Amino acid sequence: MSHPLKPDNKVDTFFNLKNTRRLRIAESASESSDDEPASYVPTAIAFILSDDTRLVASTAREIILGRHSRPEDPPVTIDLHPHQGHEHGVSRFHAMIVASNGGMVIRDLGSVNGTILNGALLQPAKSYTLRPGDVLALGHMVLKVAFVD
Image 1 (tube, one colour):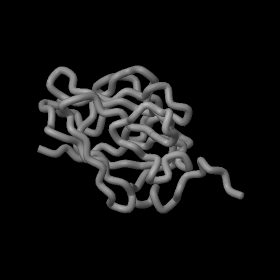
Image 2 (cartoon, rainbow, N blue to C red):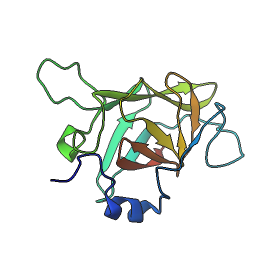
Image 3 (cartoon, one colour):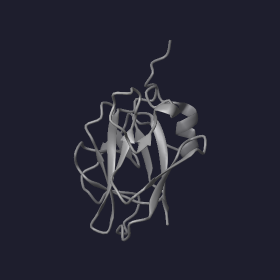
């Protein structure tokens, strides 16, 4: 039996990710895919899975990414349980995205298997700028970020 957190090569190839074992630690809140500042808050954010499934959430409130796998679990905004989130190492409360200073930021919520933004491992509870086109990995589940206006 294979390990449930073994990277899915199909997913990694889909998003052209490099070997996740050689991650660098993200150090600043501005670290992201571009050098240009995040200058707007979109109406919603779409998270695109490897099979092109689009999960969309409004930015009017905080967005919680995780799994709602048991009736007693508090709700999350983007529920990855139906998309094999548990098998990919997604925590029940994995990451949070909020509007901040005219842009969007992401924070790892102390997840067991970590959050990766464009190849950099996020430090828990620290804010990092999120931009359209960024690639997130929650555990081994890869999502591409698209802003929706």
